[in-house]
Image (cartoon, rainbow, N blue to C red; front, side, top):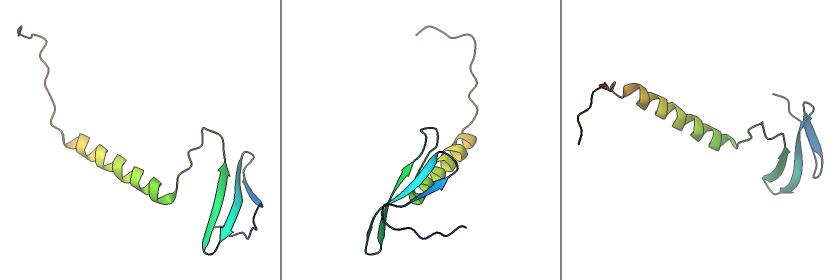
Length: 77
C-alpha cells in the first residue's frame, strides 16, 4: 500500500485519467473527490462489500433452484 500525505486542494493521480482530490479536512473526517472515466466504477468500501455479498447470495440461490422441465406441448387453458 502506498501512503501519501496531502493537504486540502491537492490531488493524487492514478494512471493518466483518475484523480483523487482532497476537498476538505474537518477533524477526523476527510472529504475526497474522485474524477474518473464513466467506465470506472467507484464505490465506498462498505458499499462494495454489500454489493459483493448480494451478488454471492444471488449466485448461490440460483444454483439451488431446481431445474424446470418445459414441455413443447401445452394444453389450452
